Length: 146
Image (cartoon, rainbow, N blue to C red; front, side, top):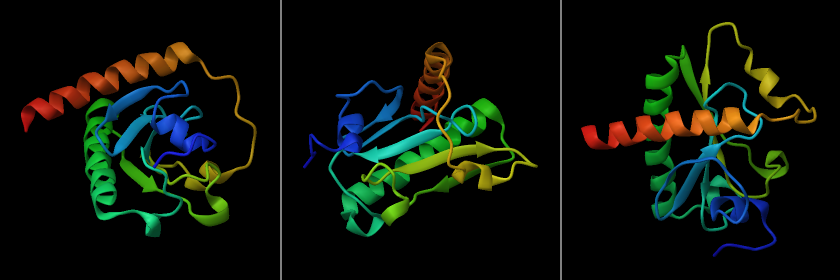
């Protein structure tokens, strides 16, 4: 059940503006508005869950399947040195809604930067729209290959 007063629920159910790259019945995958690197994607369940241990089996499986698909797309698009997948629970979950980060990374990047507390700068929405278009294209190619 989605909660109207939960930002994560509103994002996952598209009642807030997002740059969607993939969705199914259980999850919404969209670009992070303040990306660590280009292509940084968030996976949120459409139903309200707070922490990983709250997830039901169907939603947990959908999150994992989506993370595999997003990882394949990021590898194809950006040829990163690796993919970092993480989620923060409890007081570290600033959305108060379960969400998984899928982040392309390159050698020499210290991931501690990801956790720095600083204000989000101005986001170039044209840039996010360009990345969204490329991600959607590649995800559709991957889906056809199966």
